[in-house]
Image 1: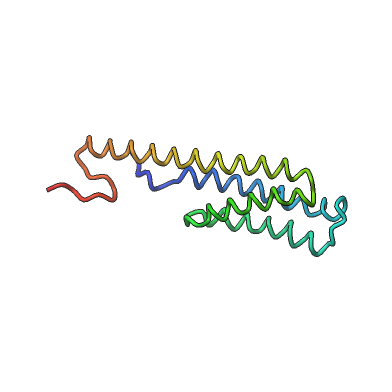
Image 2: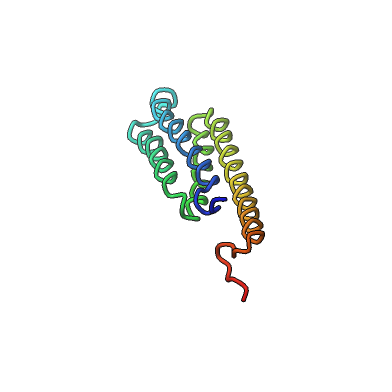
Length: 134
C-alpha cells in the first residue's frame, strides 16, 4: 500500500478546477470590453489578472493558505457578475465545484490516512508521524 501523503486528491481536484476557471475568467476579458463597455485596461487587469491568479494558485496548493486564497478567487468570480451578469451563474458553478473538490478531497485524504494507519497497525509497523511502541 502506498503512503497517503504522496499524492493529494484534494490538491489535484482543486488544481483542475482552478485551471478550468482560469480559462473562463480569461474569456471574460473580451466580454467585459465589448458587451459591458468596461475600459480596456480595467478589463485586462481584472480578467487576465484573475486568470493568472488561478494559474499561480493551482501550483501553490501544497500550502494550506492557498485553499483560502482559492475561496477568495471564487468570491471574486461571483462578484464579477456585477459587471458581467452571467458570471453570477458561472462563478457560482465554479464556487460549487471548488467547494465540492475541497470537501471531497479532504474526505478522501482522511479515509486514505485511516486505511493506511489500519494497514500499518495490521502489519505491525508504525503509521507515519507516530512513534513506535516499546
